[in-house]
Amino acid sequence: MQQPSPRPQSSPAPSRVRQALAGVGFLRKGLSMWATSPRLMFIGAVPALIVGAAYVVGIVFLVINLNGIAEWATPFAAGWAEPWRTAARFAVAAAVVIGSIVLLSYTYVAVTLLVGDPFYERIWRTVETRLGDAPPESSTGLVRSVLRSIADALRLLAPVLLVGVVILVCGLIPVLGGLLAFSLGALFGGWILALELTGLAFDARGYTLRQRRGLLAGRRATSLGFGVATYLLFLIPFAAVFVMPAAVAGAALLSRDTLARAAAPAA
Image 1 (spheres, helix red, strand yellow):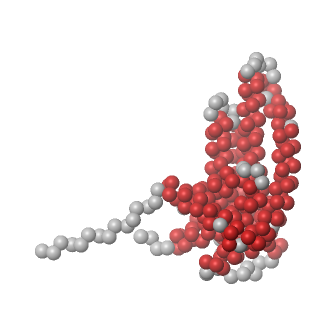
Image 2: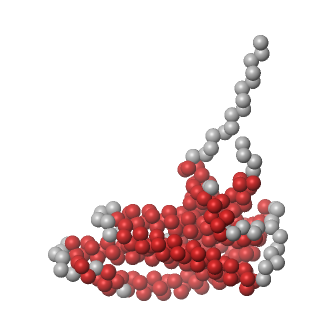
Image 3: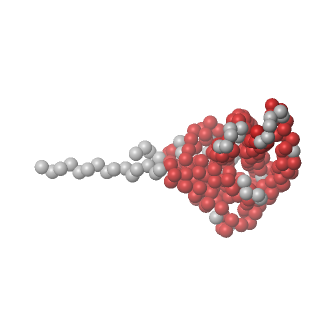
């Protein structure tokens, strides 16, 4: 009697680490465009440089007044003995810095995308055209497109402010508070960057912010790998100017891969 042939086994799903590394790979491919399309990337660096210069002024102002902010936020510690008073104010100052980094990282991307919309759309369109099956040119006017981007940015701002408060509280935890606040800021900041940077690709295909969030959540490890890597590079002084156009290109690759996997039939 002939034995039934064994069923073909589907390949195991990649681990979370491999998925996260795949997300980092999208950013790496975006950075490689500095070698293949340097002129296009330099154009994309201009708005990032302009917005970055304005943000540097804000960061300098924050650093100069950080001690005063910490004292204002800890009136309860005024009568404490040393070293507890200094420790409390240091924890608050660290939490303010980390929370500000998350806020600045998110708003930097949102503002830069608005300022340099024509440049970054050109980078995104170049990636889509090279890979084929690019979405058609949008018939939506520039003003309407910008207003939609502003509306999406404002809707994403509310959770940013909420998590900023949580990070501030985490920073008050003795010993491990700073590490916890930084880790939480990197994860949430990376998620927000992934949502914001993929807007061009998803908007061009008619997806709403809610749908974009749902599709990226289906590949959360990959999205976080891309977003957290971008977030960490943004922390390097002046690196954001060069990373920003590469992140737009990498986000186009992440978006296409996410949509292709969502459209593929279930195994």
